[in-house]
Length: 114
Image (tube, rainbow, N blue to C red; front, side, top):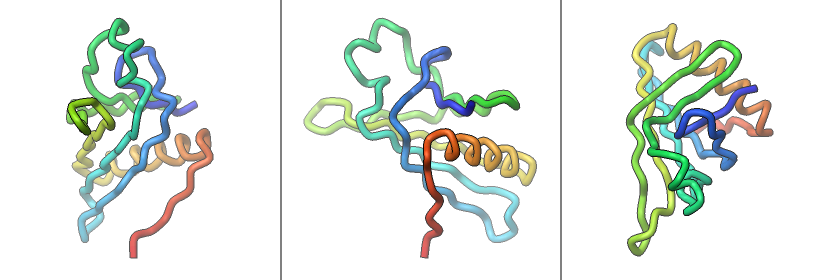
């Protein structure tokens, strides 16, 4: 099963919107995750620990980024945005395998930008 965590051991149940970019040569890219009203921002989660990164976990292991930011509306946390930078074709392939599993587990679909 593929899961996303912000605190190790606690799965985020809110499914993010994910935007991908890829360089023309296909070697590098970015994945921007946006979680609206994620579990991790709920008051009950404050006692569970600090957000230390975004962890993408599946049967192959873990992909991690520390680029995680909260978005606020009227002074209250509303969303989490996280950026994963894909540095080479091997990382791209690994990321896409994770996303295929995550999409299958969460009934997501892929829409290509026009």
